[in-house]
Image (tube, rainbow, N blue to C red; front, side, top):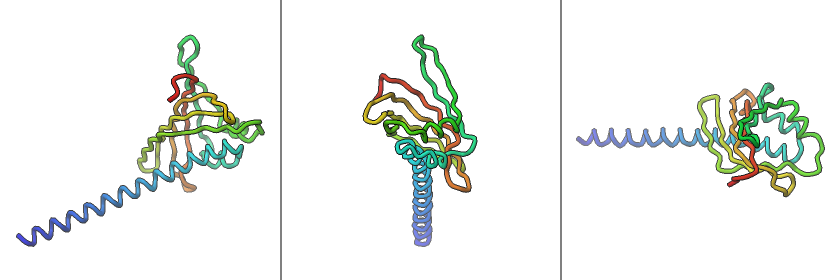
Length: 157
């Protein structure tokens, strides 16, 4: 009877250790993913196109979804190169995209980030929506493979 108690205690501590290790590893991966997303927005805010470029894989995709005044859903695509060029082109006010309530999921070499945002030019509110990021784990770390976002001026939380 005593050996079964010792086995149970040993098994219990082993399971706790595995759960703690798994949770810590997942948190570390989520922090790395978030750092890549933060790098993108730091680059946008500072107009640093090289910092923005480093956040993406070479053939990343950008797509925006909006609703037209007539109520139709409209999807538009932009090239990653034109986006990077726009960030690096001097503009009078900072592009300040503020994300919050991030939901990060990681499965091996892929991660998704759901991030509501509010976009400001300088201190002036422009629009809000949600960013849906897909990231890939590369030899150089986590990189953004795709962003799809929504954009609106009303019903911003």
